[in-house]
Length: 113
Length: 114
Image (cartoon, one colour):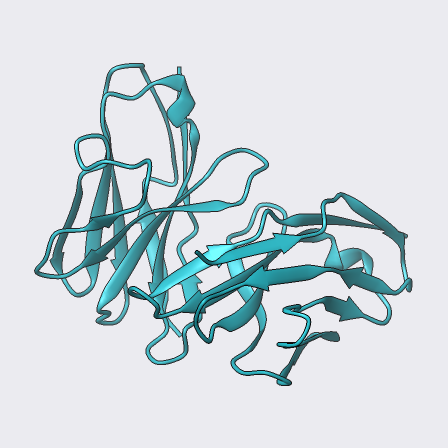
């Protein structure tokens, strides 16, 4: 079955540091890939997405590229801010056997001023 | 996009009782999903609820424990039955953005079972 593996946290960075959160997946079909973010005290919301190989999703300075050859969708940001402190979830969705989204374990990011 | 509301936002319940969580969407949707997010954990899909048919439950979740209703295209309920402290969690309602494969989430219901 489908699965998502992302790096364990927490990740602690200083403001303006470079961020990478690794995510790899296994899938039998042709999934869409997502990063969702959960800010403290808030609900889950979509950060960015990519629907096919080599697509790059981007939003709020974050980027991730759908790499089919390495089955990866790593999240990157060149310069993090304190306001980026949150939990980040990598996820995949596809219609194999009916529509379903599988989430990774989540990575908590702390950004220090 | 879709705007989703859930009621209650939180509750504290006694062991052995049941709680029904309501989910309302501002537009008609085919599929609604119920997730559980235990403290510090990821999201686990409980079931998929389609209007006019029985909900489809994931492995480890059964209808007797988590009965679901889906009376129309904008509303669903999840009941957590015969609760135990292990049911303490956040329960999230979600819908799929039509044709986009992304999901929109409600604010969640934080349940504590004593």
